[in-house]
Image 1 (cartoon, helix red, strand yellow):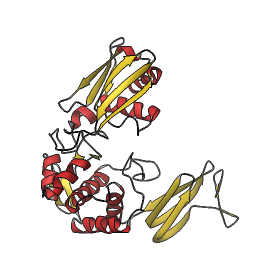
Image 2 (cartoon, rainbow, N blue to C red):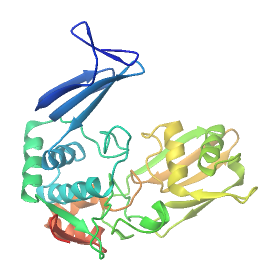
Image 3 (cartoon, rainbow, N blue to C red):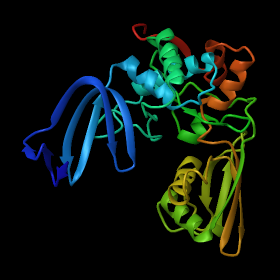
Image 4 (tube, rainbow, N blue to C red):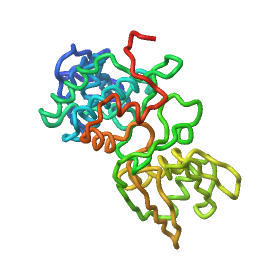
Length: 308
């Protein structure tokens, strides 16, 4: 347990972080239930227990592949997911002060639990692609993103994330289902989210939403002040305030009425790179992992880690 910045182990204060050798660990806490095949480090910080897991790369890739996919995902789609996840974590650098990545959607979901057969298939997918990454034309590993559902067309990476493009992805038509959604939220929530994204006061009625060829909101403009922000920032601000289960993607339209706003959209996630729903559908039609990656990442090529 943690008391302030002091770690208590078996009723005694621990003067430094507690380090546990690599093994299979079950970590449970408030709203947390994880199984890690890793070495652990535990320390106290402001009354909270900070747990950092250190994984072998391929063990991590297998665990992410299992955590980020549905149990009925075809094997070739799992292989494509493994290569994408491996590339992303290696290219993304250190995203947190405490560790290279977290186990949430902010980085890559890692639960370490689920159906045994799915876990085995994910490990097989990681093993069959061991050391394979996506590389950009200059040789760097691609910061290859993925998402749950594109709604029929993936988004342009530069429009969503800004330049330069480090993903190797492109906006491409896809056979992914529309995955339609709608949400009614308070008008004040839209105003607050716009203020967050634009970095200054804004009103919902003054917003102009620019979309790319996929239909994703790529820029939001406050017509009153002239300030603008990336659509991804507005989408994330809306999701943070309304709930990610309600604001599912950046591909939406917005209609204001009274003190409410109606958001209607398609897809789930930012829409850039590998579409998990589309990849699963194409894999069922006979596409290989290599074909899937060429479709979603036409500006990157698979290569071995030791190749440059």
